[in-house]
Image (tube, rainbow, N blue to C red; front, side, top):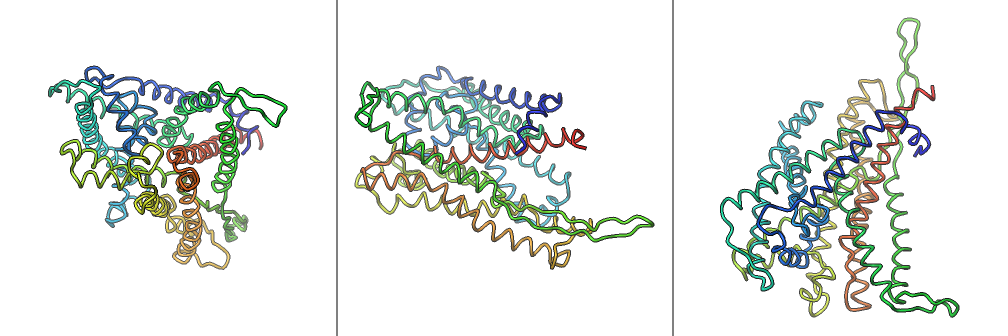
Length: 470
């Protein structure tokens, strides 16, 4: 990273305007997280929200990516889940239908059409999810003894669903506005901001647990007003955090360098080419997208199970869906696993691990089109030493990317598994997990998105300050 160049680029009005626009969009997004759904007294749904958060990982993930929109019962409660689901569906269909795959390879115009279809599909998905969330929360509120609910009229239903759908579409629009500024991926940046917004509450809860009135004698010469157990746990957690962040940075920065040779051509009295360039292939080309896709994908069956139980309490199929697609955590361990770890405890982590690997391969094949790159190299007179141009080059690049993806996907999957591994260790040694599943996912998203955005800013800063180095 060229940090001096980045600082120097802030003097450029265009660069400063782009950054201020992104910051302004993020502020607007945070304001949306505090606008309640127009559905009577939003406070009556607080108990239902608390129950939803403690019952399944789906509720916690939804609250995470909506920046607290669920706990606040805000209009962005649905969050970016419909857009993420729509992206998965459209990209799967594009790969399955040859004509759509040809359209996706048809330059910028083809990608614009596919993006437009993704936006269109987001609307009905947002409506369906909004109706499902309101219905689940409403039924949970009715079933709760601590909250009083009134019958919702058709007008209230329409107004609430419209507001929540609009909130989801506004988030999608804000994400695209951020992407247009050329400072990282907008959707990832919004999710990054959502996670960062949860940190103050986490720090506050840790602080209250640390400073609970207890005292600790440190090595017999210093007395600290902290809880001894929490203090040493936090020390160990901070050390582990630094180590994990270090390896995350290394994995994100790792790349394979392919040397590209350009043939020397003579045109009149001038000679062109005869130079060498590089083609960097990242170890994890897909970034954090596989983790977001995998978590969102696993959240949908849990939502369906919640909906079935709300309609028909005690339904075995609904209960089975929720139990199967619920991440084992500190919140649900005592209720779901009263006899300790069972075979079902490993089911969700195993599905999560496999999906992260599959989505890594899938998304890499979309963003890194080896055939297109090979064709462009051939048109420009470039070639890889020892490899024939054209299809042979495409096959060679595919082989290299598959090898990189194997190690990158396994590494990404293992990092995503770290919270579950930590929980397993604590269950075996102490009898209960400490619940790091969401924070582990959040840490992965924070580090990856921060590096991607910093790399985008660095690239744009080099472009802006290029004239000064000429």
